[in-house]
Length: 212
Image 1 (cartoon, rainbow, N blue to C red):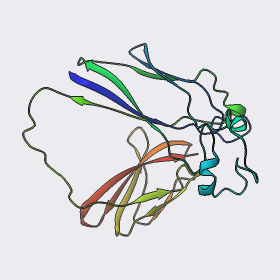
Image 2 (image 1 turned 120 degrees about the horizontal axis):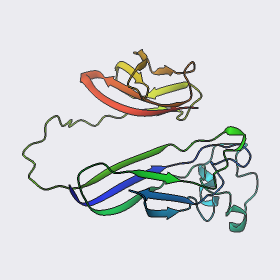
Image 3 (image 1 turned 90 degrees about the vertical axis):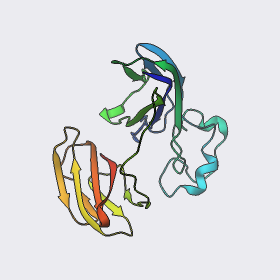
């Protein structure tokens, strides 16, 4: 059982085609154990503050400044902006099976495109005393994988030597292995994969990959 349990929810909508999910704002409804616990509509009042960070020459910004009114239905995500983190307070939570559901009833998925990657984790206080913590790594590990999402080719950026790269699908099956900074998933189906990157000194990091 947990006291003061919370969900930490990070999600973004993808699908940049006409009337796609990436930019058009839709109401999102979050349910826990069948009860609605959060309603939100992603996006900003305006994307203009992020125009200077955008590197897409043919993106949604265009060549001139838009008014707040013009942005209202089209600012679900502003290129150059961060992805919001949402905290959902649950209070006391009993041990056992629970359900989480995110609904976007107005989603269109125009031309069969678009998807909603979701990162969700639960945390809270438990009874008892922590006696010890093993396996702490004191040295920070810096590595990024880009572009992500990608059509299949990913690049690992790190100053440390790579010992091994292993990519698995959601069934835990290894679908790629290597020792280089390039990850080629071009021949695999679209979806989510996990990359386990082992660096010098047996330092290991895991990164989520989205194959478009």
